[in-house]
Image 1 (spheres, rainbow, N blue to C red):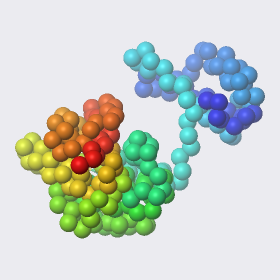
Image 2 (image 1 turned 90 degrees about the vertical axis):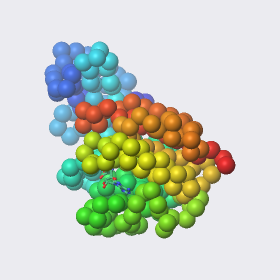
Image 3 (image 1 turned 90 degrees about the horizontal axis):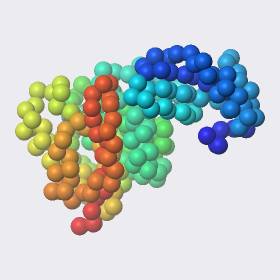
Image 4 (image 1 turned 180 degrees about the vertical axis):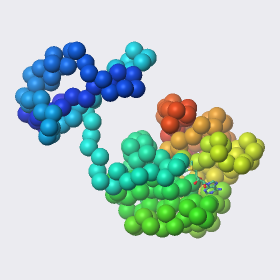
Length: 245
Ligand SMILES: C[S@@+](CC[C@H](N)C(=O)[O-])C[C@H]1O[C@@H](n2cnc3c(N)ncnc32)[C@H](O)[C@@H]1O
């Protein structure tokens, strides 16, 4: 909180559970922020927006609510990941603008768009199997968009990619049997291992439970793992590091 601009006019948003709600202690909170920061409450044109969220599980979240750049306000397609979550995946991957990034399950391109527009990565490749989604990818400026199969990737050179950031199918809506889906993950993770440079990493969002098993079979170590809720569905965000061969 110390990094917000000094003497900035601020507004505090408050939520209780899933609802926006007023808070009896708001004036005291405003005074505390004003004392720390030197600014004044300003509901009309605040420079800084803060959020206090009292969750139903008894935990409280307190932080700086960042503004949304224009490219994050477009209407999302069904199943498309929110750009904020795609951004968190980029942060978890420690993305650098010099990185070559691949999403082999690119869908409508939320992750690859964030890599280009949010992190300004130089080379971003999106691969998607469904033909009807490929034009969406091709419309994203500077993206290398490919129609292809994540389990094959013949067009991507061995050890040419720094980061794989991806959100593969979760098996909820696709007509795949669980065995087919696990096989797809296995083959796709072998390809990710092949195309990644030594010590490259994967950041993957999924609800399947066999990632630890596949990671150790294929040659990745789990560096970080977070349980998340995505549209009410339980999922896990993994950071996997490629082990030196
Ligand atoms: C969970 S969605 C990804 C959504 C994406 N993150 C977005 O924001 O639009 C998974 C995507 O993987 C694609 N897919 C399924 N099997 C594939 C395969 N073998 N190779 C490449 N893409 C595949 C699906 O068509 C779907 O678009």
